Image (cartoon, rainbow, N blue to C red; front, side, top):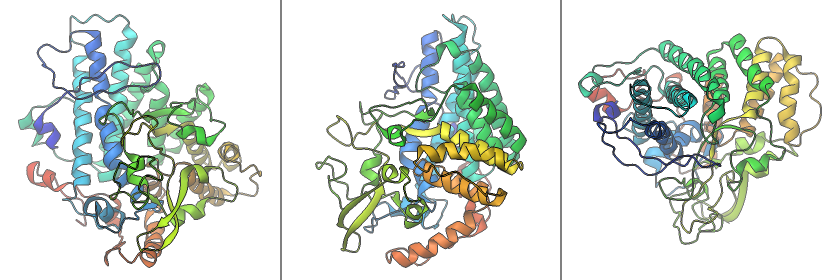
Length: 492
């Protein structure tokens, strides 16, 4: 909660281009002279996206993908291991900066959303269209829900703050229950969908919209096991017909053609500046590959080698699955043990198109239409409608080149297939760890995965992959324990 104590620092952002939401560098604005025009409110709405942009490129992939059986790390030089590698090995401590930074950026985002919502009805503001006001409200509600959804999936119950508060109030706010957090998320998303429905005439590429709110609501219901509610919401997204699958899976990860008809919501990045860009390929390429993959030999990547595809993930792809070559590349060179071999790396994210340095502009998908199809199939299957679910799984598989009809699948077999489809469809999109947890498979899968990793990598710590149920939640950051007197999660 340090973000709440430190107060709100606003970001001055540009408007939207036709292609994507451009989020520009930070600056502090005078609260006494801000929030008086429509443009200023739109800038404030833009600012609600920025903390998420920052934590997705630096921390969330560690907490949601690296920790899973999809990914590990190749770098045995110990660079970055204190904050990243230990999480991959389930050596989890509350003083890890990955947790505190993720927490602080999340609450920074919540604070911005709360501020916008509290200011929207200020008297004396003239809106050229009422729909712009509705869109701003929808964005704040959607993003607040998404910040809290990621917080509750990481930490369990967290402090629920829905209005701007003073610094002295922040230290007295304690953790709410998971149930309370989810109730707030659901309420925000329902309201967001309603507000967005009144703003369809001002939709802009890169911004959240009504479909994003409904798709995320469906995911929240699925996470909670509220299958009937999930079925209704996800069906509405499908029948609306606003989104569809890209025919070619590879096109989803072309930074020159972002925000396709399949992209419901994505974190927007740009090569225009270091602040707007991500460095995914410069962190995920083998650390011994120099410029062979990044195409920028002038950039030292000795600290790279993260989010390395595991053998578990490689084995999950069926023969003929077109997604494999898009998701996983191989570079032949010297590995961590001085042996030359074909080293796998995350290939979804690309080298810069035009930037001369380490600025990459790939967007990070958060919600895709294929996610809606697979969530809907999972929901139908859980409701005993397996035969109705199969065609939606088949759509995703057919796009991947797996055209053989799915037959003879009972509920259990279809559960297994959907889990595997989600693993390969969304690898390196920060979904796998959450899927393992919500389906109750995390302990079983990660225990077996840990044994294989320890056998393959002698440089891992002896205590690596000591996994227990308490480690399914991340530790509350130590600074929150001392400053805000929050109660720690069990086992830490």
